[in-house]
Image (cartoon, rainbow, N blue to C red; front, side, top):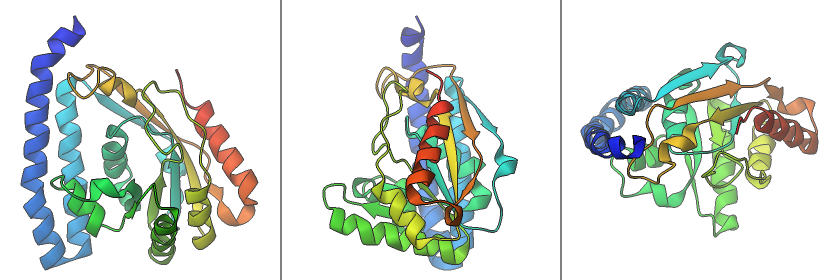
Length: 244
């Protein structure tokens, strides 16, 4: 029954979602090219605020736990499981004070109004998963950027979204580069729950009435750990916070 009801609601949602992307694309362009980084950043924040409001049409709600434990005025590396694109929308808005930049596949850097513009110009790293030689300097550049400006990188070490919510094994290479070139950073493990349920039927129709939770775990100073121990503790914290 829910799936049947979801068809008309999903149509309305996608109309609102698409309209928001189209409206904010020229806003982003003006903010970036005329007023600079801070204005562009604000435009991206509010783009994602309105995208979140669109998901409220689906009955989606969001809860973030332990945000207050995140260190301020230091570089941050958010490390999380990945269940859907709604992970990214929520993190940009709720972590907006930390200026989140993403390690993202290069295909997203073109063709999507607002999203592609932000990925190209907002400080994120676009990588070619088939070309490790290209990915290394891109991620290195991002790590140096957050180290210099006390901003944050977000990486999903699973490499791809989990369609069932079950966590996949973490890949180490991207996180290792981030830690190497942002030595004063803190790694912040985050567990995401129920995001996958929005797309449990695929992209149409969408799941209704889901409560997404984002649990922030104890931040870990990069300088205090050998990398093997750091990633082991990070993966353990993320996985233990995932409820299937």
